Image 1: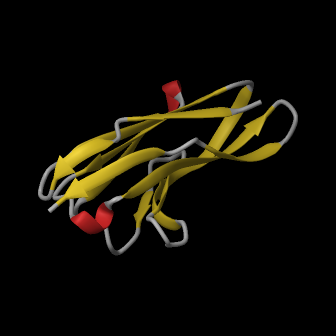
Image 2: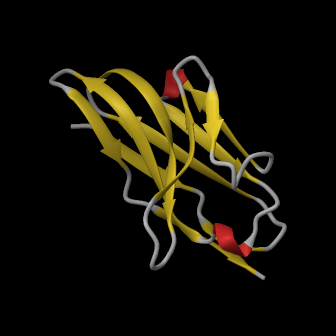
Image 3: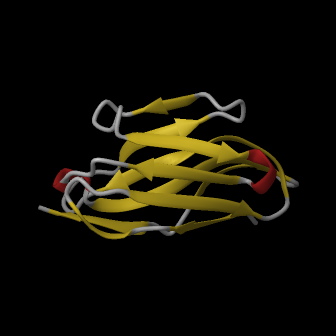
Length: 119
C-alpha cells in the first residue's frame, strides 16, 4: 500500500513563504507525476502544480511565478516552495502521486496539510 505523508503547512502573513513537502512510501516501483492540489472552504479541490519524473513542472495560472515545485526521485519526495503568499492561497493542500507499485497503478492522495495566509 502506498502512503503519502505531507508536512510544512502552517500560518503565515500575506507576502510570506512556506515550503510543503510530500514523501511517498510503500512497495513502489515507479512514480510518474507527483503534485499538489488544494481545497478552500466551500470550494472544490483544484489543481496547483504537478511535476513529471523527468522534472517538468506545470502550474495553475493562479500560482505561476510564486510557487516552485521540485522533486527528488531518489527520496520519492516533492517540495512546493510557496512565495508571495496571498490570503486566497488559504486552503488544505493535498499531495497527489501516480504510483506504480507491486500490485497495480495507484492514484494516491495524502491526508492534507492546512495553509492559512492572514491579511
